[in-house]
Image 1 (cartoon, rainbow over the protein chains, first blue to last red):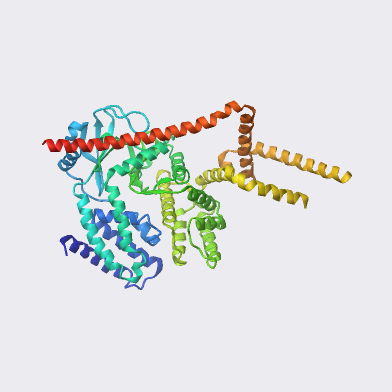
Image 2 (cartoon, rainbow over the protein chains, first blue to last red):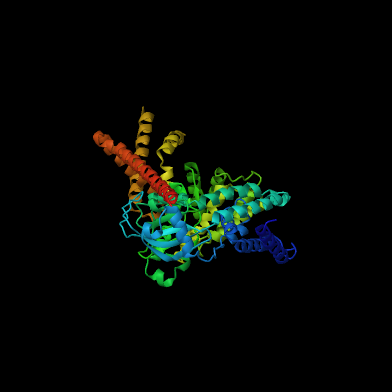
Length: 452
Length: 111
């Protein structure tokens, strides 16, 4: 076993012992047991470093595979890594551009503005004007953010994944774990990680998002400077402001926080339901409120896609949820691939209706997170498998609620979603192809009624 | 004969009443703001009626003046043109990024 393999084995063993203790040797049941397991899993990922933090973050958007408690615990995973020394950053930039950063940029700030497990960000200034993919040209001297992949991170990830694969193969022999398909899942995560380490992929997605929201004055997506972007370096416009984890009351007082929070929630719904492309990793460090009171999206490592047919069904589920209509929500959820049998349907319906009354009813402020936890828990209890896209969407909706509350703590997210959901459903009802299909039957029915 | 006349009169009356109801619904719908749409199913129907009436006016205008109808295809064309421009700009970005990598390899070879 390699040295790294021994370290991983040591951490896993220690966390397993802690799990056994905290679950009182397996005597604890249900939610308390799942919570204890999830906590130890998060701590293990944090101890094991970048690869496992990333694997944990990828798992945190997969409620279709993991228990809801695990998913919500893993979203708390944060990178706590020391900054890469400046010399190493300069060496990467020199290797990527064939010239030192002082030659490439007008100026390059030695102190990083952000550090994370995969990359760190430095501010710089453009030496020459640059024509971006969309929007106005960035003039020479513009401040830019230069994201640089940490040295050796690809090799570290590769080495860790080899060990993780060995573990996955062993775990697959345990029947209870085999249903999670650990080997296939790890392979899927390997692909996602490889894509994230190649920063050009993030740049392409950022440009697409920038285009989607080009006409929205309240949304900023930093545009990419492709001339200074390679596999290991991503250069974008610099956004000045506060990430949501650093936004405090003093900052909020200078902006229209309520409007911004409501708009932020609506923008997310537009991503899912109109553009079919959405930011699926909206934790508070990935979203910024700019000094001029706009929302800025950062880090497009994990994104989701929706097809036109899914968008129609999702809009219906969303509208049914905000109006507390369990029957409609279930009908369209089944169209989205949720496999509820005829025998299960009445009990599932009653549980969903009760959850809606408890968490989304008028009166106190609605709690989407509580609703989602209850809903996912109910699906687990009924052993109903969740389609991957559907799970990601539920998770993303919960995150949007958290993000909107980080901007304006008193926001009622369900109330904010109602006007948008109503307009959307009205527009869907009036689709020409739908009218063409439904109007003749409606006319016939009206005539039958008149002539009866 | 009387029955036929009565049936036609009933038909005309139904049509007239429906038309008045429709006009009232459109009127109420036009006065709604987006936040009010969720207050009741009636408000929703009024909102929908206003949307349909707006579309009907556009249709009437385009039927009355067929020359102006070319505006829609022109709009489509503008959207397509914008999409192609964006894809072209994306390709330019890709090439610039590749060029940066090629320059770096060339510089390393020189050293």
